[in-house]
Length: 178
Ligand SMILES: [Zn+2]
Image (cartoon, rainbow, N blue to C red):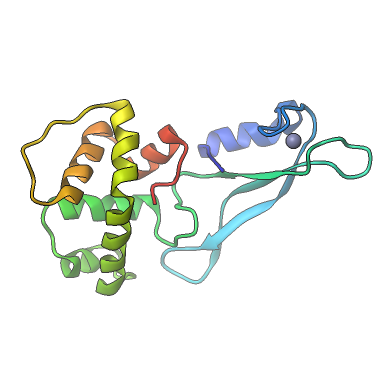
């Protein structure tokens, strides 16, 4: 899975035959293999989150038969929540907002329970996030009783000024935030 901007996805789409397969390195074997779809955050409508690419091994094409995905960083793989909303949740956590206050703030489409679930997921992901962030910038902070908040502060410091730091993280590190 690779994260690409909407613009890069369009450029890639126009010139797919000129790209090498990331697995077998052959050129001219890649073809589109459908869209990545997921539920929109605020409704049960399915939206396009990216494209799937196939290294063609059918008939006489000698590709390797593997597939990979190009995902827009506005989305988080396997999750309904968008990276923009997750960025908002993180900003509110850093302002010491309670899960109830956060649930109320973000669209109203997420329950308090969902926000608690997000906190668990962020906590589980913490050491991974920290290790990736450290490759870009070290971080010194006053000792903090809450290591998750410390990690999130580090995260925001790395992508300070970005309107959607979760999206920036995915694009920069080429890995899912969760
Ligand atoms: Zn291949």
